[in-house]
Image 1 (spheres, one colour):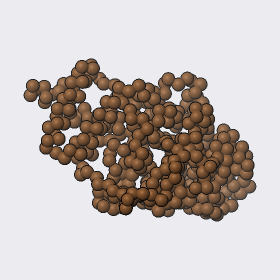
Image 2 (cartoon, one colour):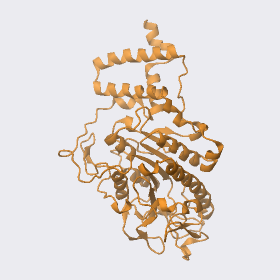
Image 3 (cartoon, rainbow, N blue to C red):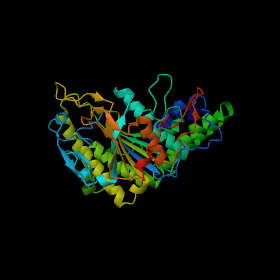
Length: 432
């Protein structure tokens, strides 16, 4: 028996749990050795900054690298800042977009453009972190991203599936920050490949034996160590096992979609990622992020942006259409964000440089009133001209749509107080 326990068919308890955790939950089992987090709300926990939720899930599309607002959603027709980029009308009165977005132009009645975005961060790492957390990057703390806040306050909609999923590669993503590690996103690097290691490599009887063995060892751990940490650890791979044996696991397999549907989204990682996001939304995954980049067009902006915009145009228009016809758009908030815009000035390399002072993001569905442009940049797209929206304001608006308590305080392990969007205020005018 001693030999059996030590070898366990060459699959140790640590390897077993660790593999499951990384595959299904996007976390490392080792992280549960950290001290327990004590979180508490200020006062009685009541929030004066919440509304009845208009959305119950989020699909968050992140354009890494800093997307040019001028060459996508905030063109300035007739201005020399445009270079060769033209503007076209949309099906929303008075709203124009770049000529590179013809499909989205026909669906602008579903979309609210926020063209008065402004960030305090002009470097990629810092800007990315700020956009995801509403807080500046610090070496002393890691703040939670929006998906973790949503799960913290509302929990899962589908108990068999992860509540937070990220499609694409972003090693700098803040994840669950100082929250529990099981609130981190599950990482899917290739949407076409689905969820890796989703079935056991062992026969069922041997697999069950290892589960029983792990439970036996956990009982010994509970006797010696803090029960909360051990419970978090065991819950982690209990959820993984539940997922492996759930019919909802098929949500991660886009091969079941017809070629016609897959082609509509685009034969590329972002397009297929948006298709996977739609499938996960159908199965009530709370928060799905899909990354697309890089939009860092210091060189050849007018070669790079048309190609990237075509991919975005095809994928996002297909996503909005499918969510609508499936009856999901009304309670699914679709967000498109980027860390900053690009300069009106065209540099010597036919590119545009970082520009955090004015840029555009968008929202659709989930109670948002489409067919509008909120705020404005000036005639060159250089500065915000009216109704400035800060990054914390933007994130507060997401939280507002989800009915989250924006002013509820949660304390980090170092006893520092934080709220979902720092001092951000929601843009209530965006809602129906």
